[in-house]
Image 1 (cartoon, one colour):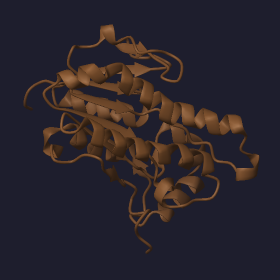
Image 2 (cartoon, helix red, strand yellow):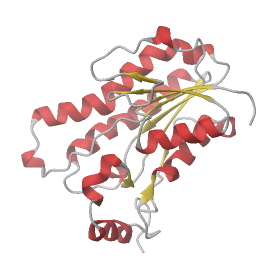
Image 3 (tube, one colour):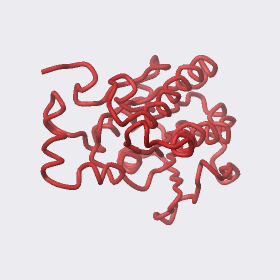
Image 4 (cartoon, helix red, strand yellow):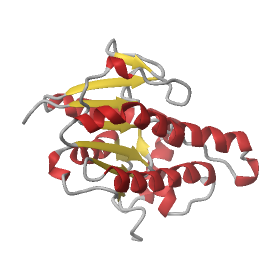
Length: 229
């Protein structure tokens, strides 16, 4: 188990964030959750696109930050409005920027700390109707590498780029057995990802097992971005 560490997860009440929180708690760590909708009695109410995180309520040392909020806004390019591009950028990029800024001193206070952000397979693998989300997540990949360079060697920064994962955010895309089967077949490993698949990579990146890993984008996508089978 090792020493107990403090982790902050933004968007930790459902989907991938909850799976990460559950794994960290299982390993004996202290986990602080923050979410727009609240839920758990221990959850901070926090909309990263609007609010300043009340860092006074957080431990003096944070060993890890995970920023999970995202969007799946799939439309033909000609139907995407300026506001939709800005909204996707706001939740995916500016929310992460504001959160990191709010807790940076606490991450620096820890002996070793780690930030995990989220991209998407659609940045590397061009897909129709993904222009807005791929644009925002492409910025996340740039942010990941830039901060990894700036914060080294004190804070490691990495990102995970999943394919479609069975979470509430993807509910409309997996709302029937036919849709689930179609999604399964698109992936070389012949199944859609589960939140636990992504959480295992995230908890690895937060851990000291990944102490020589920073500035990387990890494609946890069932082989979709790299294979044709």
